[in-house]
Structure formats: C-alpha cells, structure tokens
Length: 184
Ligand code: 5GP
Figure 1: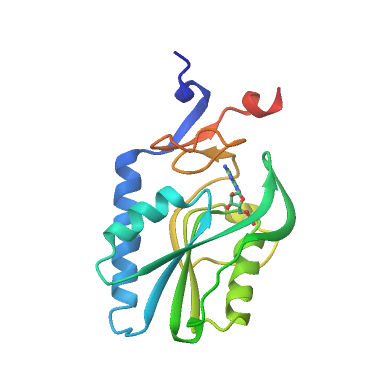
Figure 2: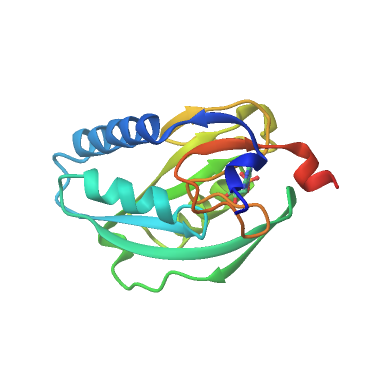
C-alpha cells in the first residue's frame, strides 16, 4: 500500500510534540483571557487549520465560540500574494466579541495581516492570531502572530491539516515534503 510517510523528508513535529505545543498555546490563551467577560471567538481559516482548531478548542478551559472563514492565497507551493475571501464571517455582535484567528502557518504574513485588518474594520472588539507554525524568514509584510507553536526554517511542510494539492492533511505529524514530490 502507498504510504504517505515515504514522501516526507524530515519530521519537524511529532504527534506528542504537537500535543504539548497546543496545550501550551491553550494555557496562554486561558491566562490572557481570564478576566475577559466578552465572547471569545476562535476563527479558523479553512482548510489547513481545522486539525489545529479541533485540538486547540478542546484544550481551552474557558468558554469559546467557533467559526470559520475561507480565503485563498496559495496554489501548489507558491503564494499568489493576493487574498480572496471565499467564505466570509457573518455576525452582528462583533463589537462585543474578541477574536483569535486560528491559522496553520504564517509564511509571507499576507493572509493574517489582511484578515486582522479586515476583522478590525468590520468592528471586532479585538483581534489576535494563533499560528501553529511560523516561517519568519519568508515574511513579505510586517506581521507577528500573538501565539506561535513552533518557528520553522524555510521549507514546504505538510501534515496536521497542511496539504500539498489537497494531500497529506491527515498525517498526524508535521514534516518537510520531499522536494521531488512537487518538482517532478
Ligand atoms: P501567507 O499569507 O502567510 O503567505 O500564507 C499563509 C498560507 O499559505 C497558509 O495558511 C498555508 O495555507 C499556506 N502555506 C504557507 N506555507 C506553507 C507550507 O509550508 N506548507 C503548506 N502546506 N502550506 C503553506
């Protein structure tokens, strides 16, 4: 049987390391929002962050609401640079809501910089970002997530929700995809 793991050059985060990392982020969020009486909305960016979102929401102790947006900025392994909203957020209580955008990875920073401004413009009381992975060496715009799981080098990674052409999302770990998979 074809084994997706054979396409991985190096594992960056094992299942256990991911679990510990997500627990750490959940604890930070619980601490930071301990005195917050407003609604806290975890807003996942589809599709890459669904696995992270599922784990993170279970580990946060305070009440949260969840919602989803879908944007498109990538094709294959390269960013197009322009962010299109494919699924928008429709709520009439944004003034009374604190949002944490839940994202799989920060690369150029364009997606999260755009979404943060967009949600503030729509009237959210506050907007922060939690990203499982960060590739700071690839940044094209000034942006820093408030909660970061792991900083990684400039490599194309898959697993734990992250795909290459819709594949590898169901790998339980995060690894670097062998370049020959996307260069041949
Ligand atoms: P940014 O706007 O920061 O350049 O891009 C963010 C999006 O690009 C992420 O949500 C993710 O979908 C995609 N992306 C960036 N780097 C990688 C990567 O190494 N692997 C995968 N699978 N997607 C990536």
